[in-house]
Image (cartoon, rainbow, N blue to C red; front, side, top):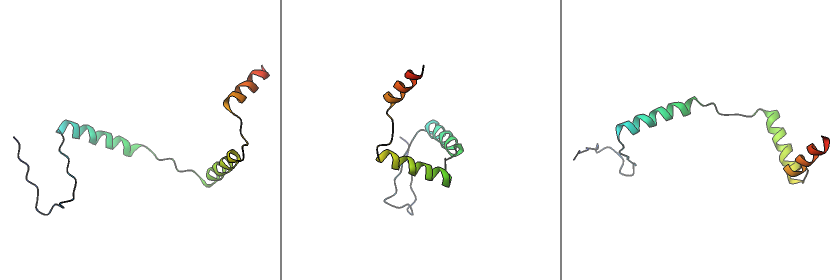
Length: 76
């Protein structure tokens, strides 16, 4: 059995997880890929457009998907 020695300075409330090295390497690769993903940050105009869309939705100014399909089918 493997023995692990933890430093006395380690916080007793700290969470510790032991995993096999291959799994840890896989996690490091995943973490590197996640950092490469860009986060979408909307511009001010996009935020305003989204706020307007939400306001219209609350007011009931929208079409259902069925209504859209019906309108498209009528135009053909």
